[in-house]
Image (tube, rainbow, N blue to C red; front, side):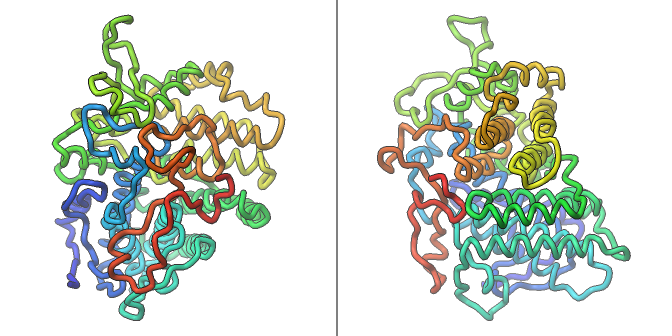
Amino acid sequence: MRTNNIFNHKKLMFLFLIGSIGFTGCKKFLDINQNPNNPDSADPSLLLPTVQAADGQIVGNAFQVLGNIYAEYWTQSPSASQYKVVEQYVQANSYYDRVWNTIYRNALVNAQLIINNKGAGLEYTKGMAYVLKAYTYQVATDAFGDIPLTQALQGNAYGSPKYDTQQAVYDSVFNYIDKGIALLNTKTSVSPGNQDLIFKGDVSKWIAFANTLKLRAYLRISYKDAAKAKAGIAALYQTNPTFVAQDAAIQYSTVGGNENPFYNEMVGLGKTQNVVASGTAVLALKSNNDPRLRKLYNKVPSDNTPAGDTIAYILQGTYQQNPTKKVSFPTPLVAGDANDPASATVPVKLISLSESYFLQAEAVARGFAVGDATALFKSGVTTSFTATGLTAADANTYLASAPDANIAGAVSLEDKIKIIITQKYYAMNGLQGFEAWTEYRRTGYPTFLVVSKASLLGAGLMPQRFIYPNSEVTTNLSYPGTVPVTTPLWWDTTN
């Protein structure tokens, strides 16, 4: 059934009442347009925050959980059970119904409604919508591979939209970004102001976000089509681009319904602590004497050390072998502590400042752009440190001694890329889990990830994608069939 969903200003505080799109049964979620092929009309200034809230829900909840577990920052708690099937690498089509709906029925449909609006003075808002449309499509194709694109979002014209190739989706991402930047460069438009949940209507920051997103997208295809990536990045740099100088993030509060999406999920699960520290990430941080370790995981008592001074972990997927072990939780810094309300206010980062620096460092290291790759790399590390409450001095000490940060000792280009991506992995711990897992699939770095001990896939196999939702299986006549979770994506040449 189609529903009309036109928000008024007094209801904007409820934008974050997007129910769980993870694994928790029937929760409500932001429902702006029930039918992605038959959208309604609404005021663009009111639709913009719904698009942003939906993107925050996508990358801040379901993709956050799966990403942080697949990237092996977190693992299933021995004393809980919510994500056992994730550790087993078992995926059911029904898991993805809500996140798919949030992608298409909330984020993309409402972005398209903004773009289609014929009102005057909307260039800035439309430009932001194009950038968000590009962002959403990239996240979606990086999760599922081939997805509906050319026949999607077109009203009743296509009741069963066909699936386009991932390569075609990436071409559209670049196109949408270009259209967005052109509109954002308009001089006579009206700013959406505080209706913009990310940059409060600051157009210059949106242009920087668009440039950074384009850089991310071109680097994503760099192993698959190096020539296209190089040409695209070279063209980008010819525009003398700005890149994000702060996190592109959505802020949350402790007001009911406006909490961080993952924390909100945990509240819905009775504040059960379902995720704990994975030995994969903890041991890697320890091997580099990384002080971020104690910022990312809480300390628990140990018989052999002073009380409260141990980061306790289990190996990935060993929840069954450690039924009584007390294990460290992710801290409220990453919204991972179910019983600490400080987790409620943690922002969802669409692109972080440290990620921006690492993207630039990789582009320069590959010879796709001009600059100082080492300086950009160090800025990425330093920004990650200061984001956790540590200091630039702490980062300098780490850079001088950590084996995984020795970019000066890198001999080959691939050695440099390995160090850059490994440090990006450390910087994304807990906050950008899906992006970290995606970068691992793209590059094969870091090299220390292991197969979950609970895996049911078979020796050496790991997930490379999400499978399509049950809603597509049952309602889309163009459904291409379930693709195995072990099948690499189009841009993935490392698996």
